[in-house]
Length: 122
Image (cartoon, rainbow, N blue to C red; front, side, top):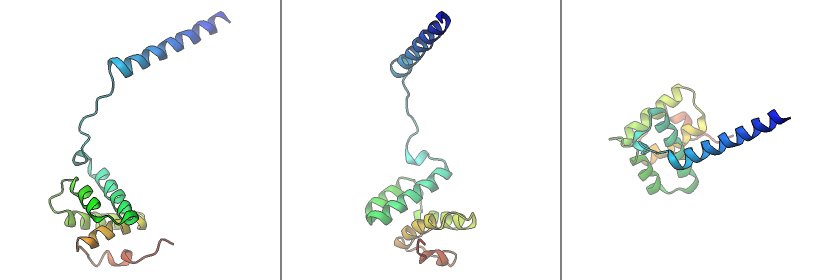
């Protein structure tokens, strides 16, 4: 019984010291957190999220600003290439439509996109 109590006190003290050190002495420092610094995989996921928000609120200026944060020189061509890659990879059709809706707004369209452009969610 005494050993269990000592072990519990040791665990509690260790957790307390660890939390104190982690929160006060060596807290987390964030760096390279700009959207521009994202890996290409995460940039594509971010673009899908921007497209979903655009579908929801219809605020093109906000969507365009968010896409501009990616730092791509030609966002229309980048979106087109991303859509083609997503279609080839068999990605979720809803995600593809989110991207296509933004590409449409930019005037970017290709034959490969056509089958996905007018589909319903069901």
